[in-house]
Image: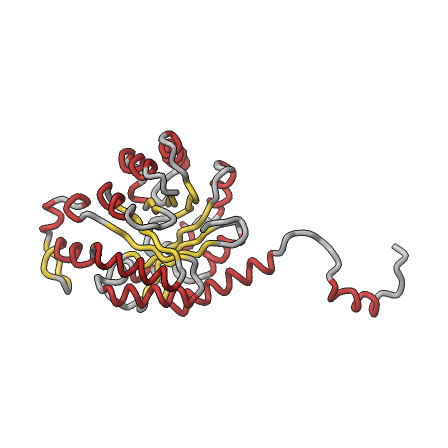
Length: 284
């Protein structure tokens, strides 16, 4: 769970499993080994999220020749999520997903997940926000493609129906995000604007440094897309980090939390013999 004591690290598997349950399960194991707190997936009702025209659009993939073939091929159903749930329980790692429609939200409520994740693309859909909020499940809300005015309206909409925002994520929805558009000071802006909310960072950038810097700026949670192989096919692979990078990211975040300390200036026990040796007197 997201707390004040340690940054909550989410490995966004999303659709990078490429429709293979075995690959998804391997990614969960790798995320646990890397030290992540949670893994995240996506869930869609394909014929609700996409129009018939969009699904019929030509698109070659391993699943067929239309966009619909690919979308359906990437989508997991109940059997797959049952196995995901069972493995996460076995490994003691949390999991949840981003629903893209009301039916998918209801589908996910059958599982004892700690959160529902609201993707940046969904924050302008008032009915969807209200549906998610009314489930009573705490929400993680990304803010890509949003200005501060829209974010205020999103928070107000969720609060108005009694929803709970467990974390509000600063985010830029480009894949990968250029350095000039990451704007990490947005974390501080959101913290000032919403002092009662925890603020996180959902990153799509190349490299690890911006995500680590986000923690230094106060992010209570960070999320990164992950992959077994960045050269694999799929729309999100290029903006993802591989599992060895994920392990390095978590390790660096935990070290950062240690070196940040508590801010209390004191003389450490290890300093005292050095002071006795090097100081000639203590007249001040």
